[in-house]
Length: 168
Image (cartoon, rainbow, N blue to C red; front, side, top):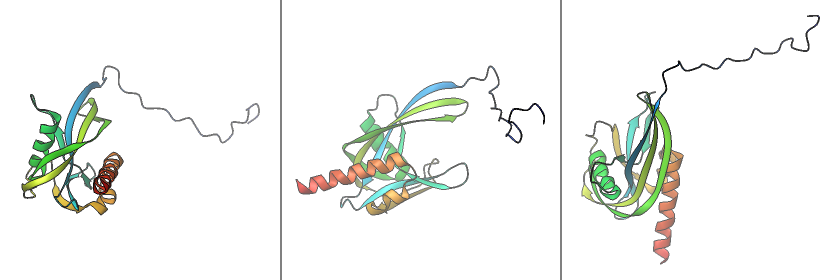
């Protein structure tokens, strides 16, 4: 076109969808606790599987909300029992993960305190409504089984702690 300054064939700029005015998301902070539960031989860990919104089974470490009057350690032990059927004791802190997500018109900043726990008994159970499956998984397979990179990082840290304990 005469008079055009080199815009022939240029893609049209994309318009960003704007949120409707007056529909701001409320931001909330949530805190949970859970962790990596290993068997006495430190050869397996218990994981929970949940279906995502696309129907895929995602494996993760058990965790849940802190109830009034609970410490993070007490919450980790309770949530492990509720979500997996396994009784456990806390061995040591493993790390904290925080992330953001949107749910129910809320922007959530979630902090999860993870612990290294050792099984003291119980039987696997997926009776918790939030859990689809529960399984003992060999430690060697955790990094390829866990859905979330931050949790895989915690597993690597736990393995380093185990190696250090063996040398000591």
